[in-house]
Image: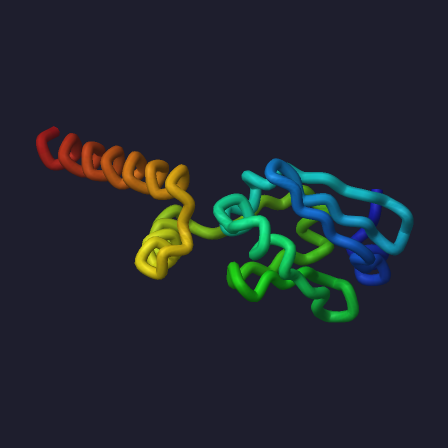
Length: 127
């Protein structure tokens, strides 16, 4: 297993994003694949947005400008999921919806999420 000191010498070489996974090739020869669901902004992004990435910090991280997402090589190696709160993600999705950047599937998921949040709120106030 890599130590934190070792991780600073490991960089990203190549990134591939499919419908289900983020695959990262590292300079030490490893390829790490993680579920796309770990990073909701990538998950909800379009293929074009997912494929518009660039390396940052000499390959210490990956930046997706269209999705305002940054993921470090350390997080990928350690298996850390996105730390974004549900509230922040919902706000981001609503902004995308207002700009017409959501698929019909994602719009339906957002409506379902909003409805379930309202139902939880009502049940708490009537308890």
